[in-house]
Length: 197
Image 1 (cartoon, rainbow, N blue to C red):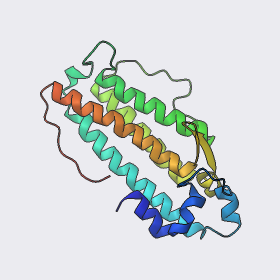
Image 2: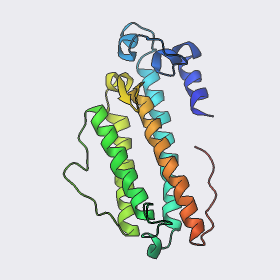
Image 3: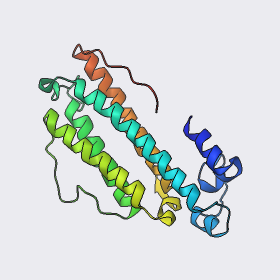
Image 4: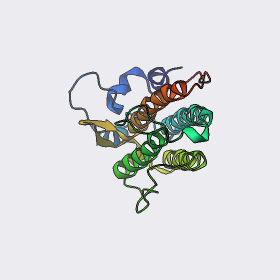
């Protein structure tokens, strides 16, 4: 089941615009105000939304780790041109970007605040930091209040609901994971197939 269909199922098609899947540029009541007005069905709906986000990020973690663990350790410093990031840097960037964007927009502590990850990391170090990132995302999904989860935030020149930010951040990881599939192929590794989202 895709994400939009899931949201249609739990929220009803008419509520998608209230929650941020706007098809036009019209202004609607902010999600938190809509919830107070009784348009959102309450705790059951946000619980289902949290379960969906956890499932999506769990699948993301499986696909990311499948990709990362295929690259031989000696190629984590590989890059295909001087301008490109190395394989290691691709994942370092994902960790820093995901945690920073989520923490900054949700008003929570960034686990990397005051920590400078090395530009080049070993295979084991990349895996450890990715595990930390995914744990931080899961914890955030579980612990953000309903009001924060349904509130609006600015992202990439748009105003989107906080829950949609989780999908935007995962989409960013998909972008870099796709690049890393090419890195694998350039080093003679046939990427393992993975299915689902």
